[in-house]
Image (cartoon, rainbow, N blue to C red; front, top):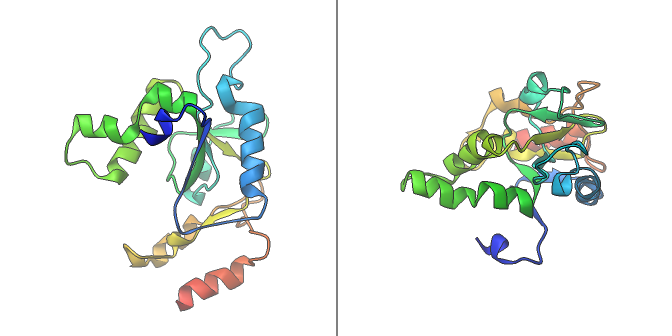
Length: 192
């Protein structure tokens, strides 16, 4: 509600506290969103209904790779995904105005809802009903990794989660974050 009440704010960034980003990742994502997605720029010129830009994922779990689509509305360097883990993403005001506050909407449906369940409801139900995509930059992905995929405060060490690192969807290699070699980073996380 705070973001929606402040009309001078145009973009909202969600970022878990265990996300590692490259120095220019956030600036690059904001520039991409503003140029290609914001205010429904992704829609065809002939579209009668202009909406928000949808969600632009900065971090994308590797398990999403096989679910990405390059069919319309996908274009250029962007694919679309049916769902998102949601560790780091950008969204514009028009998207949040179209879906409403995800937390408030979830509480209307169930007073005992958890923040995670509210997030899932927004990504799986509220965005699709408004025809707002989840965008994935599959060409030259953002330098972004979710470190909680290996060692999380809530769930401890999870060896089976190791494959969830973000990958380059063209090369199928782990996305490297400049200044942090993935092999060293993974070893440090496992060593604790």
